[in-house]
Length: 270
Image (tube, rainbow, N blue to C red; front, side):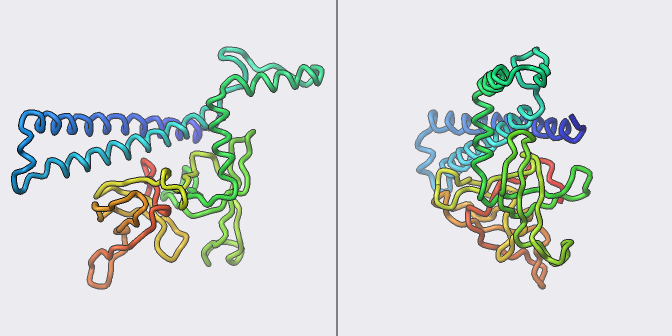
C-alpha cells in the first residue's frame, strides 16, 4: 500500500465531506425560500422578485452535488476494494499455493461473492473499454495536473488499473508524436457523459468551475460556466477557459458540447 494511494483516498474522503456540507448549505437555502413562499406566496407576483429563479438554481445545484457525491463515492469504493484483502472482514489471507485446485477455485468463487456491490463497481469500470475518458496523466508529485482525452484499452480487475491510449499526443511528447499508452489507477479516470444518453448528462450552474475539452483540441482545461439558461441538460455549455485572453484582454466565450464537460476534481492543480 503506497503513500500516494492513501493520500488519494484521503483526498476523495475530504471531497465527499465537502460535498455533503455544501449540500446541507444548499438545502438550508432551499428551505428558507420554501418557508418564504409558504408564508407569503403572492411575493412571486411582485415585479423584480426572483424567488422562483433562485429556487430553480438551488435545485440544480443540489442535483449536481448529489451526482458528484455518487461519482466520488464510487471512486472511493473502487480504491478501497483494490486495497482490502479478499475474504470476510478480519480474516487473513490464506496461502493457496499448496491447496487442491478444486478447493482453490471454490475459494476464488466465494471471494467474488463477498462484496457484490463492489464487484458491480468493478464491472462498471470494465465497461469503459473502448470509451473516451478524461485522464490525469501526471503523478502525485507533479506541480500541475494534466488531463487529456484518452481511449480505454483495458481494465485490469486484479490491479484495478486502466490501460489507456493517447491517440493524438502533442508535438512535444516523446516519440515524435506517435500514440502513447498509460497505465492509470481508477482515481485518475473521469468518464464523460454519453453523447446518446441524456441521463448521463451533468448540469452545472452559473459560475461553476469545470474541466472541459478546449474546442478543436483533445486537451482538457479548467473553465467557468457562464450561461445559466440552458433549457435542457444536453444543451451546449458556454464557457470561459482560464488563461484564454484575447488580444484586447477580454475572456472569449467558447461553446462546448455537454459530453465534453466533466466535474473539476477537488484540489485540481492548475
